[in-house]
Length: 433
Image 1 (spheres, rainbow, N blue to C red):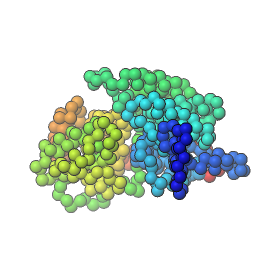
Image 2 (image 1 turned 90 degrees about the vertical axis):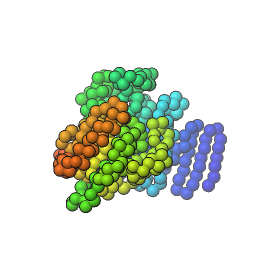
Image 3 (image 1 turned 90 degrees about the horizontal axis):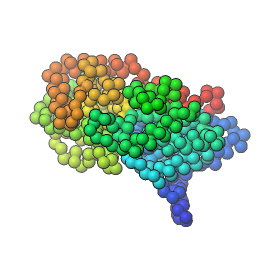
Image 4 (image 1 turned 120 degrees about the vertical axis):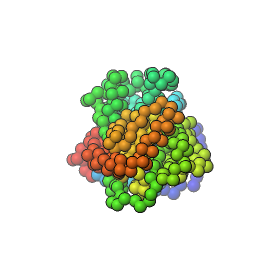
C-alpha cells in the first residue's frame, strides 16, 4: 500500500482496488484504459452505459437488478454513486466509481465538482447512454452530459429517472410551508433546458409526477414515460401457499426510518394498541444518520410495543410472515417499492393518500387508504383501520387475496421493468455481446 499526496491529488492503492481523489471526493479508479482502448485493438465495440445515482444504498435496493441484466446481455456498465462505497463483493461484471455527494442540500463546490467529474467520466468511457437517477444527478450530471454530447457526440441517449419529487419539489402551497424557493426555481430552469434536448428522455413512476413536470413545461408525452416502479423478482416475492397458524396478526412498517415516511404515526398506533394480544407491530428499515428527518435506531430499540429488526437484507421471508404492510408516508417519493413487494407477497396495505401509494393500493379492495394532515390524526386513523381488520378477519383475507391478484394483473415484475429500461437506454440488439 502506498500514498501520494500532491497538489490536491490523492492516490490510494490496495490489492485489486485503486482510488483517486481530485480536490474533493474519493473516486474508485477503474481500468479505464482497457475500456477506451477496445476500439483500437480490433475488438468489436460493445454498447456502453454510464449510471449515476445520488445514493449507493438506494441504487443497490432499487436499480442493481437493471445493471445485472445489462451486463448479462453484453453491455459495458459503469456505475457512479454517492453515499457509502459499495462493497467490492457486490460489484460483479461492472465498474464502479464512488463519489462524495451532498444529498440533502445544494453544495455549490461539490455540485460543480459532480458536473466536472461527469464530463471526465464521459470523455474517458465514451458511453452510448447515460442513466441519471434522482434529481441532483439529473441536473448537474444531466447538464454535463448535454455539454459533452454537443462537443464530442456522446452520449447519444440521456435517460433521467425521477423516482418521486423529493422534499424540495413536493412542497405545495397548501402546506403552509415554503421551502427551497431558490432551489426550486433553479431546478425548474435547469430541467426546462434539459427538456429541450432531443437526446433527453424522462421516466417517472406515477402519472401524478409526470403531470407535475408537464404543468411546468418540462415533460410531455413524447419525451417521457411512466413506469410502474422498480419492479420485483417473482422468484423471491410470492405468497405463502398455506395460511400461517400463528393467531397474531402481524403488521409491518418496512422503509427508511424517517418521520416523513410515516414512522412516527406508526409508532403512535403501536402505542395506542399495545395492550391488544392479537396483533404484533414490526419495524424494519435502513437508518440514515445524515438525514435530518431520521429516527435513531437506538431510540426504536427501547420501545417495548414494537419488534424492531433494523436493516433486513432478506425481505421476502419476512413479508410472508406478515399480514399487513403499513406506510403512512408524506414523503415526495414515487411508487414505494415495499408496497409492490407486499402485494407480490399477498399482504393487505394500510397507506396514506399519497400518489405513489394510490398507484398500488385500491381503497377498500386491496387495502385501506387514509387521509390526514398531522401524525396524531393519522395515527388515530391507522388504529381504526387496523382494528377493522382485527375484528373482521374475513375482510383481511379478502384484501390480501385481492392485492396479489392486482399485482399479477400489472407490470410490476422485475422482468417487465428491465425490458422497458433497456429499451429506453437504446440498447441495439445487433451490437456484439
